[in-house]
Image 1 (tube, rainbow, N blue to C red):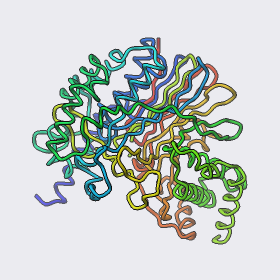
Image 2: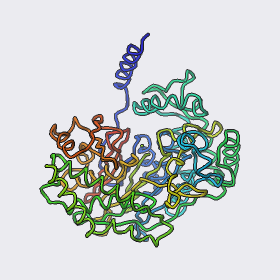
Image 3: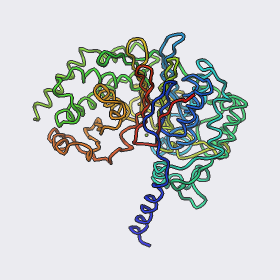
Image 4: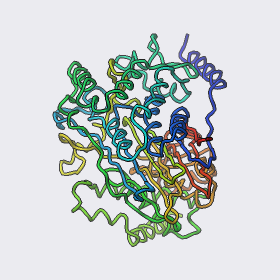
Length: 537
């Protein structure tokens, strides 16, 4: 059978399967709280915990563990987790920096470019178990074993493979087939599980049960740590038990703040990318009002210019959060600098004519915005066969050329991050919690949704077409959902066009919760498998 014929049969099978797939609820309303995640089964997990008496932190942690089960290409026990949290009592808003760490034996010379992308050497010390445990111990109401119950059940009983999971697995198939991940994530034939089929993970379920019984310390200094150590030694990895024993407890940091149309924006500090988001918002508000409409050619060009300039500034002003004397980086956050950038962008225009996220609010007023990842799709593409989870490939997120860079690869260093979990306040109360996966597209996706929320209802703001501009001037956009004169306008200004599918996986996946009066409104981005739901009792 020739290749074209095989592909046609495959496409027909996907079309038939797609008709049987679960259709997630993209927008929901409740007066008892709200959960929005990138997978509908994780949303169900968070809602169950709210209904069981947990607060927003408990629900977020339950949903995060569940995402590690039903979104294995994006996150899991082998990754890292970042959280922005607002607590009503005592009233404060803070970031939990859950950066992973490079192993003690890692040096730039020990890692070739392929080693940084895939395989056992690509892995940093996972922080997700430590961060999630810290969050519920210090700010939750329920115990770890209760919060883990939904994830354990998902792993044991299984869930239906979505079309997205099937396509991502097929995309990475050549990297998974000959590794330790294959027996866990592929069928016996070495092919992906088809969309609509039931996918069970009994090995991962046993690991989660052990964490529920013994605590996450077992992951770092107990039997699980020993299993990770042996697996790494067998396969030439750099992560050993002495690395795990330096448990990567999260660091509480002060959020970065800015303003948008009378609202106050709290977002993630370095090593996250909140500065980039704040600069985008500042610059946008300094642009002429008649040039702020993203759905016009002029507005789309302004959007591309704003995104590119913010990324250029972040690249030029690397910042180590543990070395605050580099205060010159704060210029990115100043309004006078935003006015300067806006003028430069306006003059230029006249001259020319992947990760997961969840958001939770509870009825007491607590809010959580949480982003976690194993870095690239399917992480390092290797997994511990005794434990059932994929290792991350965050060694690819370090700087390797400039030894003076604060995110240069060195033993025990934290990698550069693109995450920006955000909470927006109106008055003294949280109005909006949001975030997105998508690497460099995280802040540009969030920026567009935040701006559109000023004039559109939540679902329309998330659903609207998006674009992203790279440092090199390549504009990726959902072209068929935009006016047909936008692409020519961008091309006239020297941009290279990268046409993406409608509702492109590439252009982020914003999960948000909004509080309007007594109602919580949740929206899950249609670009992935997410859903929104709130408690009924």
